[in-house]
Image: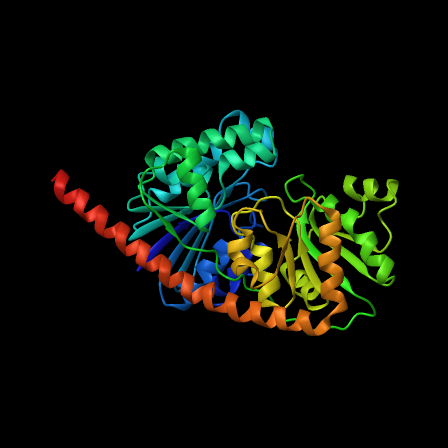
Length: 399
C-alpha cells in the first residue's frame, strides 16, 4: 500500500531510508516540527513494507525540499517562524505549499495528523480517501490556554470538522471530547499513539533519587505544582534531584527565575529542550517520572517512561492520562492540583524500591501489549482499508 502521511514530523530520523548511495546525509535534511507519534507510525509502516510519502514542514526550509528512498519519499515545505505571521492569514502560505505537493501524490490513502493546518491542507488538495487523527480537543486547549493563537486554531479545527469523513482519536477521552465539544456525529475510531522510538541507553544509578518530567512551561503542564511538591521530597531525601526538560524549562527561562525567586530551586535542574538521545539518557537515570499536566489526550512522555521501566506519577483527572495508565495499574494517579498529594506519591515510590520496581515492570508489560508500534500500525491499516472501501462506494454512487 502507498500511504501519504501529512503531519508535523522530524524527517532527520529517516536519513538512512532516503539514502540509496550515500547521497543524503542527516545534516542536509531540514529540521522538522517534532511529531514524535508521527515518526513512530511512519517507521512502523516502513518496517511492514509499505510505501510512505511524508509531507511535513520546517522553519529551516526556504523552499520545498524533497528526497526519495526505496520505500520513503519526504517532502518538506517552509513553515514561518513567527506564530503571529502564520495566524494572521490562517496558515495560508503553509497550507497552499502543502496542498500543491499533496495534489501531485498518487497514494492509496492519505493520513493527516492533528486537526489543524496539515489536515486542512490535505482537504484543500482534494486528498481522498483521507483519514484525520485528532491528538487534542481544540476547545479544551483554548480553555487552558486562552489566547488569540489557540482561538485561530479552533477556527481551523472547525473547518476540518465540517469536511473530515474518517476521524480517529488517540484515546476514548479525546473521542468523547470531540463528539461533545465539536458536535461531531460520525463514528470516531480509537487508535492510540504508539510507543515512541528511543535510542538505547544504559541504566544508571545516581547517588540520590531523581524525579524527571518532560513537559513545557505552560500552565497546562502544571510544572509549578511539581516544583511546590519537591521540597517535601527533599526533606526526607536531601540528595534528591528534580530534572525538568522541555520548552521554557531551560536554566535561563522565566520559570527557572521564578523558582529561584520563590525558594524552590534547590536540587532542581532546568534542562531545556533535549534531543531524543538525551531524553533516553534522562529516562535511564530517573527514579520516578512525574507528569502533573492538568489535561492530556494521551501523553507520549508517559509511554516513553513506561517503556523505559520508570514508575510514573500523573493526574487522576487529567483527561486521557488514567486510560493511558490503565486506570492506575501502570502508575500512581493523584490529584495534581495538590502539591501535597504529588509529594506524598513521589515519597512513597522512592521509599519503597520494591513497590516501584513492581509498578514499573507491570507498566512495561501493559504498555508494550497495548501500544506497541506494530499493533498501532496494524490498527491504522484497518482504518485505511475502511476509508478506501468507503471512498470506492462513494465513487460508485456518484457514477
